[in-house]
Image 1 (spheres, rainbow, N blue to C red):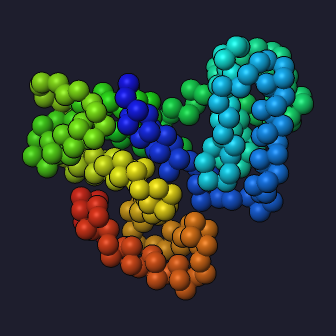
Image 2 (tube, rainbow, N blue to C red):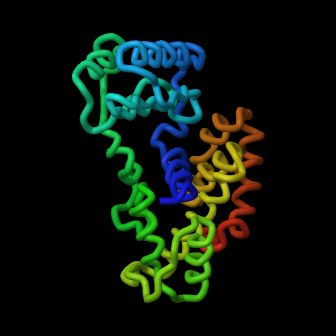
Length: 252
């Protein structure tokens, strides 16, 4: 599976993280980094070289991986939640729970499920590269606007095309257009950097509740502005969305 699809799934997990608008009041990035570094040193000392180490920083998740035993570890962006390979040696588990006080460990497979609250019938809800590729390829060839979105996704994500109609005709046309359009926006946001991903989170919040001011707290936290400036940003973004996301923004 190509890297563009892997990168897309990573961005999807980030922008759909249920804690994306929440920052614990007591979160200290330096403390989280020290804990992470101490964990990496301990695992390296006890189990051999650490193959990958990326600390959480309040914006993205941290990652640790061991070669032998083969263990993958993902740490929540605030350093307090942990996911691991579905099976890990007891000695590794003891270090995580007993010595570093991670009170809850979930399997990595849980990260591949749709975000909490996502509709089960969303046509593009897969969060693993192989499954998402199949959902994109299953998009139907009509209307022409949807075919164009599918072709764009296949080209940009380096997905080999296949001949024949898709299998998603049971989903409403507007829903397919909106979902494919959102996926294109996620691809572009992943390339443009952190601010683009922040706006993608805000856009999703606006489109989910177009007639209320619910996104204001998220704008205040994500952009570090006060309420009057956040209100201005919200109104400006709401006015732009019909142009940026025409299929979804048409309902604003």
